[in-house]
Image 1 (cartoon, rainbow, N blue to C red):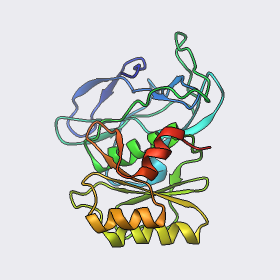
Image 2 (cartoon, rainbow, N blue to C red):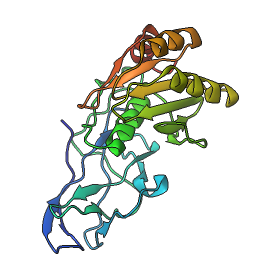
Image 3 (tube, rainbow, N blue to C red):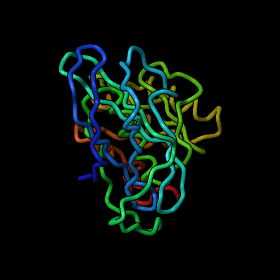
Image 4 (cartoon, helix red, strand yellow):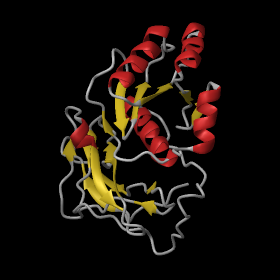
Length: 232
């Protein structure tokens, strides 16, 4: 379980309901939990459309000083409105009780529960960061299906649909990654077609299935190796 930051009162601008909200903390590469500092005097806003830059916030780990992007705090109101919670500044601190683990000795992965397509992307991004990838961002090119995210030397595709990924999906990811001189990794909620799995082995693409707990499960031996070793 993640530690939670201090609770703040949040009012829904659509229906006026009051909520008590505490932002979850996410594990930094060093092992310390990082939570966004909430603005007690700010006003929550309704999310009317999605944009990558607005869904993420850059935070600095108070333990090791590393800066990374993390999901911006959000809360779902009973009236159906999704609220974006204001963040104070861009610096987060690790709780005083946190004991960082050396990056070379990876801590157990702490997943992000998947309820929405956005959660699936967040889960994949947190997992890639746990593996050691840095500067995770939205991919420059939009894939034919799903959502593309990128890091240094990596292009990942996250498919949050209920359709198994096809051979074409895997080949398109591989081809796009090749043109960018990057490795390709695929995350799917619904698994893979048999020919897609065989083609991924041939092309050297690690395949993962995201379960609803947000834990990526390796599908092929390439994914097993990546999960075991992380970024070398």
